[in-house]
Image (cartoon, rainbow, N blue to C red; front, side):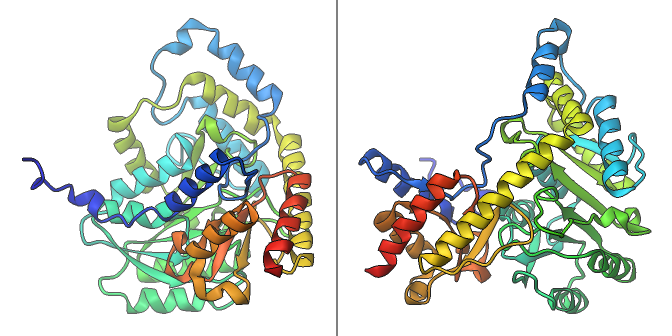
Length: 394
């Protein structure tokens, strides 16, 4: 009777590729296999104790159980602006240029919802974090994908060509560095050229720096906000999930262009009342007093990165070391390349009890790769390398 009723918005979404791996992972575990799981970028560490204590202290106050502020309480927006000043020497207005979000994902989706009209064009790197593309699709917009490889020195040229040749002209461009999943990184010169291009070609920029704090060696993640005039054309999103092991807290923020921040604030005022006040106060504690925690977490990821890349390479699967992020973007071994990333991921799970994310889930240009997250301890990483060594011998 209801079969003829269509839900056209969700029909535009492709099948969820990761679901196939997740289902097989559960089957393997139920069958008694010890699955070593590198598939999801879900931090395995505890939130630092002083952050938890501050949130618990506030949670015990009855008055904090009322509705909070959709755009974030003043002290949190102030802490966000101070964080940018300390980290990047960037000045932001806490009233008009900063807004807290329920994780950076929510902030990005609602921003896209606020600024995208049916038929609008956005340009997104490919591979990319899935919501960077799918949020646009859900809003009736169209996506032009620009191929991105790790440390792709030609990416800006490809991006500029796509922008100039696009019809209609893009309303905004999405960039994410350090990139998830490819781990590609850029320097300030990239943002300088991108801001200049945005002003010439008249488009906005949405920059996602979720992994800004997880950098290795001499590399330090820049912010587009460091570029003079960036606030005229750009916003930037960040999350506390990775830097402070606060993934489940769902705390993020968006800063930059007043018009875009204002659009997000307006639409959020209709959709939500913000995070619980205790979560926001915990976030204030993290941003104001969590520098040592961030460094300890960064060091842990760096150590795991070296162990994983070294042991997997020794096992016969060369893994290039990234400059930043909590992932490795691994080319499928040549003998399995014909399978594609989804079938290879399934085979690796069945034969080696190692779970990874198939690159095709991040876009068509990712199908020769898998993403490996540094979310298992060193002992588990070494065991995974042993499993893979045996798998590659078959």
